[in-house]
Image 1 (tube, rainbow, N blue to C red):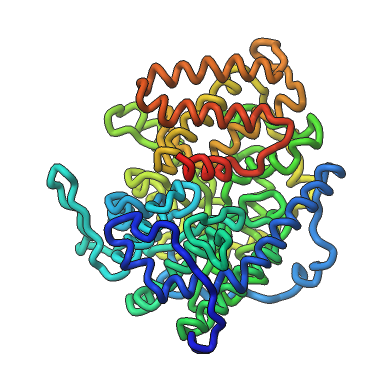
Image 2 (image 1 turned 90 degrees about the vertical axis):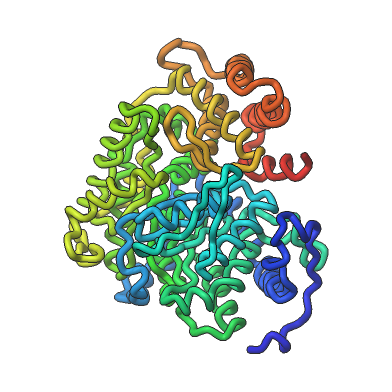
Length: 542
């Protein structure tokens, strides 16, 4: 296939210079590729999104999900995914974080982690400048030229004394659009913009470096959505003239319907699949969202009381490990939200202990590696997996035949022992407003009370509030009933607290709009599927 043989698509960029070097990324060739991706695949993307709605309504009405009878032959088959390329054979510790600004990208690449999840999704606000800057930084990293000098004169360079982390980029999910790139007059898919710009500018560079274009795929709800990504990969590889199977993708199993289609998702991507990841925080968000109106049996306790040892979470992670290793794919552990604080030794010690316990459980369960959100936690995660893996690069040989997970175990929400409290409600509202305010300011990840909050944890927070209102939950610590009036009262108090913490200017610019948005979506009769959609509209109109 040659570029000249493709039909022409109209593409317009509403802001061609969001950063000084944008012209290096927003080239005619790259934009033509992005336009062609959208013309071919955006209509299918919209069909897949429409299917999500009808499927969720059926599940909420019946209070359940099950493994698909029509794909039983896939689950029973003896197929395997393609063998991992050498650069991805050892993933025992993965650093996560945004690819913009350059300083954070350099710190991640220098962190000593085997892999860096370069995030254009939950840890990044998709302001247009951030999107273009992230791709520019990843292009520069692939060239080996990425650098940064702070206003104080401190220089940041890619290390030469040890290997850099292998880049696995995470584009936005299928649900988000990019309003700054119009294809045939319509907003484009954020996922296709992120993937298209990154792939066009880095695929051949990465291959020359002995790596390749590797991706984490977020928020999928079905194997048909995975099939769409596979179609995108096949077209993209032909477009640039690189061998089929060069792209490798790790899928985040972070929605409850995807937990019932792990085999099928790997099957659809099998020539491009690298593994699955247990995206625990989005998974909890998805459970709340999916069964928000299915009754009190699906009301989770306070977020802080839900642990990975809850039976329904154990069922999810053990099924993931078994499925991955049965298919020759890697099972990647999730994010521990606690982070160290270099100014508070006791906080750091507690963070290390919690992360060590979390990663020990994952390594012993058979995971091949796991995530950390801070460079100081890389040695902790590596130490744990080193002790289990030894000289082996992974645990693919650990098959877990004893694991048997049925639908009722995945949906046993009642197994999460705990209570709903006013303290938890207050924390949810505080976090939702604080995170949304920081997101609106351009940062997608922020430390709040020594926890790393990103879009997933903010989604849990605001979704729990909506669900508690609609189930008239009684708070265990005060005996009060969660009503719209109570939420309005507590939200006003938590917003006032934040006002005192951040001052008048930041409050007026970011925190007051964030509080208003959280009020709108928590108090609305209709549930908002993604906080980031109206937040994106708010940021774009600022």
